[in-house]
Image 1 (cartoon, rainbow, N blue to C red):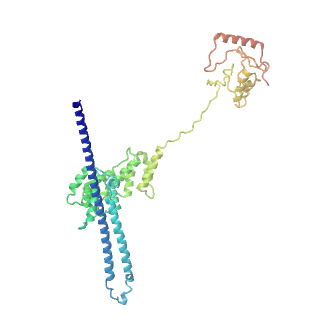
Image 2 (image 1 turned 120 degrees about the horizontal axis):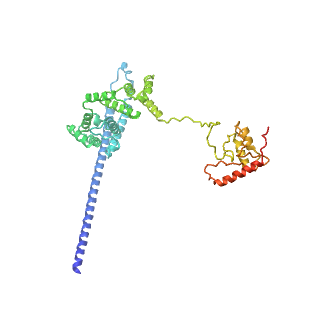
Image 3 (image 1 turned 135 degrees about the vertical axis):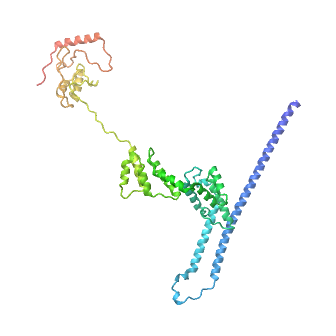
Length: 441
């Protein structure tokens, strides 16, 4: 029993030791993180102290300059003929004070902006374009990057060759700008730029290296882009894509020092249109004053939208032809028992006739057949069937059953032959007993 418990105690001891090691590692990591945080806070406090010290030095220098200027000996009295030459000299003192206040305020604002620039962690929130070796968006990247630098008053680090001596603040901000430049480049382009700009570790040299990568061999690039611009056609492109391609090519030429005028851009736009926009191109060529590139693009876009809109179909009329030889079947509601081939004499005449055959009305169905009824105008008179097929119901015997087979409604079940024979015999017998009266004169 003791031998079986010994391995379990060893496992517990090992587990306890592992837990202690894990807790010790966590505590060490926590102490290291706190130490790094304290170092960062100390660095931030030192930067703030340096900023405050710089601002204090600026203010002290401006105050000394004002005191020295005030303590200077007054100038000798000018001759009478020269007193009116510069009457504004009387206001040099107040004007100098205003200029000093403006300079102090500007210096304080620049220091605050530099402090905010140091706090930027990810430059891609300000510059969305990332440059690659084969990228064609250098102009857009350049514009966005200069806007970000102007926001924090740092344009001089990439646009000016002057480098102040013994200026810790300038060195610090130059490192910030260089880190921003490297943060907007791909890995391949970063290696190329780093080798191109190894002659100096400043943001200006890095900027020039990037420009030489995309703007080098300007003449050859300008020739290629100019030929592309003058041979570009729309083809199957939409108007938006076609105009965007033209504008991008013109912007790239402008970056190479070969700007394209707006009139030349519009002429190339009209020249490359496909056959669908020939009429619009002719209209644009003859317009006075000549349209700008944006106006021409708007006209073409509107024409493209008009072409894509569905055209309404012309209204169609349903024409019903009524003739003596028409063989179209009549609706089941208009087929009258005993009169399968009667022409439509009117809207209400035929209808009343059908009802009189069943309900014993006063023969208005016949009159509707002769006179076109009440709603159908001039109709065609129904033929009088006085043969073996039977006779018309009259006011003497409204319950007369018309002999002969009746037309079957569509979908109605067919009667057996023996029932049809019995009905025919009964109809023939009743017809022999009755005679139809003469029509009303």
